[in-house]
Image (tube, rainbow over all chains, first blue to last red; front, side, top):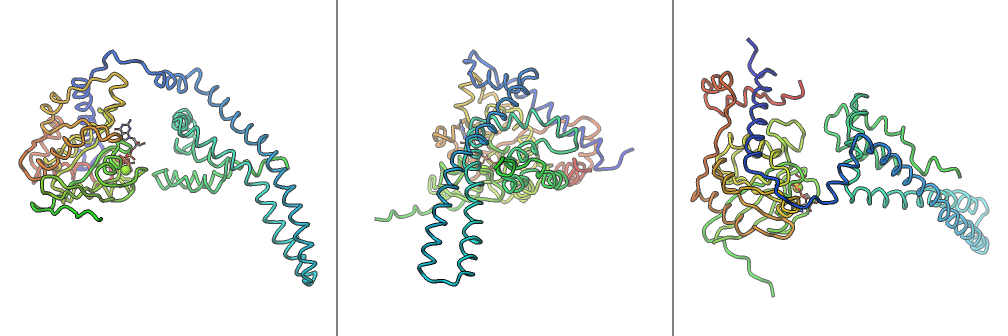
Length: 207
Length: 208
Ligand SMILES: Nc1nc2c(ncn2[C@@H]2O[C@H](COP(=O)(O)OP(=O)(O)OP(=O)(O)O)[C@@H](O)[C@H]2O)c(=O)[nH]1
Ligand SMILES: [Mg+2]
């Protein structure tokens, strides 16, 4: 005899609930002769065994390609602008007659670092995240999670991790913060710790 | 000029919106009042006036089951268990009704003052789903109201049903699920069916 609160009764109760829900739903919901919308067909295609993975790879490669290649141009422009600004600022400070140590500190230290970070990081993020948002709005991201769920499960992780990893490609901070959507503390920890295995586009760009 | 707030001549009612995540609870609440969508993780409030009543609406975080263990689902569960609300609106996505029914049955064990709101009817119609609302209502023995939260369709009917149930003018008696001889036997021996179920399911059954 199994004790109260045991798995056995829980399974019985849940099974009865699901069975009942199924019966009632099938009795009162009919699929009439509605249009078969394009979205449903697309959904079937994007999550199909055969085309799901190739299409997913293709799309993700496309996103990365656009990000990596596309970011070079604005990055170059920004770098150009900042080096011009650096020069002008240097002249300005020289005219102001600041001690050269302070000038060095401000120009080669503070300004240059900030400028570099912006020039390198901003363009890929400004391209990747809108693209990612676009995929999200299309409803494609949940399909990616669905496709990858199996892989992650076999690795002992949560299917939703597919999304936080993908976010990590844009920016690991965003990826790690996104991990809060994973419910179980253990799987969330795994997701957070392994997020760095998806390098942010800003970091892998050849500069 | 500032419009005067209606005066709740006939009293206040407390009503909660429960349901699966992403069913449109927050969208419904925004139609009534002015709330924001997005994943709800804590209680959110709103109110509307109807027939002299002020109805305070609580937007609960979405939950698939009362026996769940996520923090935000616990918020919803605790509120439902507390029986504070005079009525409970179960907001279901009409395009996947089956998933919501599970919750409907579970809530039926806790409280009889519930209303099933079939939301996203526009999407259901677009997909060619035909839902027999009256039959469903007769089977579940709770009011069933189809709505489209995005446009506000069916909102008047929902408000009416809410007030009728919350004031006790309409008394739903949700039918209970039969769990099989073995379980029913235990439940009949418990101090109440509900306490028995709670004991059987434990706090957090799916996490060992
Ligand atoms: N087509 C359609 N979409 C709807 C309807 N109602 C809500 N939605 C959409 O469904 C999504 C989820 O709505 P929410 O109101 O945030 O859902 P919720 O039940 O509060 O979700 P949680 O807070 O996570 O439990 C939003 O994108 C809404 O725009 C509707 O009647 N028809
Ligand atoms: Mg919500």
